[in-house]
Amino acid sequence: MRALCWHGKADIRCDTVPDPRIEEPRDAIIKVTSCAICGSDLHLYDGFMPGMEQGDILGHEAMGEVVEVGREVTNLKVGERVVIPFTIFCGECEQCRRGNFSVCERSNRNKDLADKVFGHTTAGLFGYTHLTGGYAGGQAEYLRVPFADRTHIKVPGGLGDEQLLFLSDIFPTGWQAAVQCDLQPTDTVAIWGCGPVGQMAIRSTVLLGAKRVIAIDTVPERLAMAQAGGAVTIDFMQESVVERLNDLTQGKGPEKCIDAVGMEAHATATLDSIYDRAKQALMLETDRAHVLREMIHVCRPAGVLSVPGVYGGLLDKFPFGVLMNKGLTVRTGQTHVNRWTDDLLRRIEEGQIDPSFVITHKVRLEDGPAMYKTFRDKEDGCIKVVLKP
Ligand code: NAD
Ligand code: ZN
Ligand code: ZN
Image 1 (cartoon, rainbow, N blue to C red):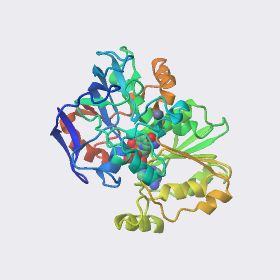
Image 2 (image 1 turned 90 degrees about the vertical axis):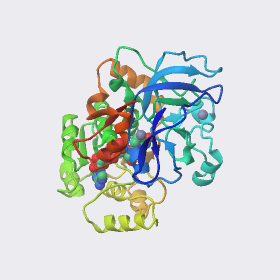
Image 3 (image 1 turned 135 degrees about the vertical axis):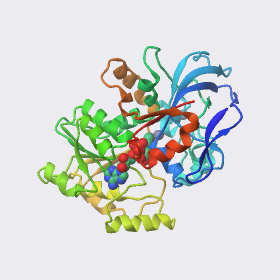
Image 4 (image 1 turned 120 degrees about the vertical axis):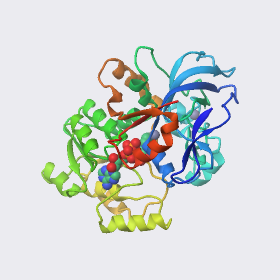
């Protein structure tokens, strides 16, 4: 089959690789009808995520049709239409029983490595680092789904792929980011990053009834989409984010802050951004903490920082004392996708939201390598890419 494979920094190729097959009794194979490129894939593309290997098949946002099931998968039938959550989960361990699917204790086949690095294992993820199991991803014609009796979202026939695909990741990710803010009707929520995750966080925050949403980015079409979603916008290259947020909140700061940027934050040439770029380049730190510092500084005391943005490891010059003295709460994590998807599928079916609003590019799988660059460089108005294998 054809699949997008990682060959090193900025080197992704559409290779011909062996078709996946059933390896365990709880596996299923799906024929991928649509898949997407995520901001998390860019951390792999840019070489910032440790634990990648030559030839790894990328992709963790995929949907399609079941073509084969293992003997213990009794609740999926050949021909059924499913969206595959990016977090692989067993459904039975203590964490899964609590709904903490992204820290499933059983689905990471490199558990020993994860135990060493993280202290405790996290769930297996598709198309990601070997720290999370190194499972082949869904930017491919076929995908093997481990623990498939639990790791799926059944979807109805009436809706198009584009409306359903983002149940795999970015819609529940934006939703979880908003839910983790414990929103009150009086809250002002500031959201850094108007990429696909930021866009879903904006719409979720509005749906969940916050008083006001302020979105921060610098890419004009992303700011325009944020505005269309109901946000007031700030261009971080044109104005001081902290000053503007304080102006908009009578000097008090937003009650809730969401980091939908992650470890590759850009900034005007401030001292801290130059410092971060230098240290990251020399591998003295893994992540650029600019957005986190800004959030800690501007958030109203006793507020919440919700961090869906992905970080890989070590941060430097992290003002923990400020965080502590202001009494801020930090909530973060890879998304517990299936915790939210029944509710979100219902909201899509009821027409409360159509997540396909974020798509700007629909291309063949073969065009994937070029689209990684277009997406990363935000060329051609690119916000979200859907690939059709
Ligand atoms: P993206 O790269 O398209 O979006 C990031 C946006 O942040 C860009 O529009 C960029 O212009 C903007 N940005 C950069 N520096 C900024 C700054 N200083 N202030 C404000 N905005 C800034 O990616 P995406 O797909 O939207 O993903 C965003 C983050 O969410 C990534 O880190 C990704 O890995 C993460 N993510 C996490 C989960 C999860 O489960 N927690 C799931 C999906 C994605
Ligand atoms: Zn993702
Ligand atoms: Zn589990």
